[in-house]
Structure formats: C-alpha cells, structure tokens
Image (cartoon, rainbow, N blue to C red):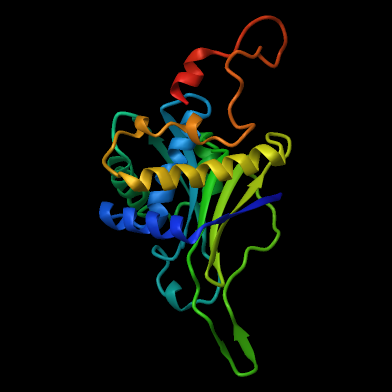
Amino acid sequence: RPGPRVEIAPDVIAATQRAAEAIGASHFTFFYAVYMVLLARLPGSDRVATTFQSAGRRGKPGADQAHVVFSNSLILGTRVDETESIRNLASRLRTEIREAIAHEIFPYHHVIRSTGVHPRFAINWYPPSPSGGVDGITFTGIDIDENQDDDDLNLRFSSYRDAWQVVAYYDPAAFSAERVRAMGEQMIALAAAFSRDVDAPIRTVRSADLAPPGVLPDSPGPLPGGGEALIHSAFLDRA
C-alpha cells in the first residue's frame, strides 16, 4: 500500500544530479546505487536482488507509436563492495541495467515462474514530465496516485510541479509506517553524503551516522526475541 511521502530538498536534487553527471550515469542510476547500499547494509549482505521498471517497448516493433503501457519489471542481482566508491558502483550498475533492458521482452511473471527468483525490493523513477494538452484538456504533469504493489518495499521517486519526493509503497506485514519513513529519510541522507565525494570508499559514509531514530537497533540492547543475547555487533559494524 502507499506509505509515507518524503520530500527531497532542491539542494539535494542539485547535488546528486551533479554527482551523477560526474560519474557519467543518469540521476536514476545514482539513486539506485545508493538504494543498493541501503538495502545491503540492513541485513548485512553484500548482494541484493531488486527490480526496476523498463519502458518495455524496445522488443516490440512499432511500439513507439502506441499509446499504451508496455512496462515490465526487470531483476538485478547486484553486489555491493564497501571498499569501492559510489562512482564504481553506479558505473557497474549502469552496465547491469543496460544488460537487463536488453532482455526486457521476457515477462517478469515468467521469470519468477521459471527461476523461482522473486525480489521483494523495488525502485521506480518518474522523471519530470512536460506539460501539454489537446483542445479543451491540459496536462500539467504526472503525480503518483494510490495503487497496489506486491513488493515488501518499493521506493518511487517522482517530480511533480518542480518538487521531488520519494513515495514508499510497502507491505505493512513486513514494516511499520514509521520504519518506512525513516528508511526513506536515510536514503536521501545517504544520497546527499555520497554526492559530496563520489570517489571515496562507500564504507566512509556510515549509515549509523545518518540514521533517523528507529532505523538501527540499540547496540547494547537485547535481541527482540527475549533472553540475554545482545544485538550482533557485526551488524552494527557494517551499518
């Protein structure tokens, strides 16, 4: 279901756009790379499976003239190495995205059925849409309305009337609304931090230093299951 909307400040949008241009990647790819870091750190994994949406038109002759939706979800299994820079991660991700798009004709539900791979995290990017219209009708842009999503978490970035935001669609059985909002806020904070030095090792930007309350556990606190066991220190070291 649709969850919190987190505004992205104009200075963060400008800084991340400059960082993307310095890397030679799109604005979307830069944010996607930051999303990979966020997701990899939460479970302490170095590989993350996600989906993103493609236009879905390249494999269909004449589709560029059709006024319908061909969008398809594409899967990426991305390795996150904390010793490399966000420049290297985004550059590698750019290549992986293009390789996935080259096979976008294969429907997402067929991939799930044939491989058993079903990522639970997704990202969508809605770039600024030009205004226009026809006689009697004016189009002012695209806003994200309520619809359904089968991901545990799907971050949708959009620009509407010159204001950028990230809308988190999430499974309330997997996350609370407060945690989802905190993850969105941390995502933006990480993007701003990485944009300041695209060549620094990823590990130099610590999530723990940027985390809103409630995102990371209390290090001396007990595990939620009860007992005397404490939060695993390796998790916090990575975070």
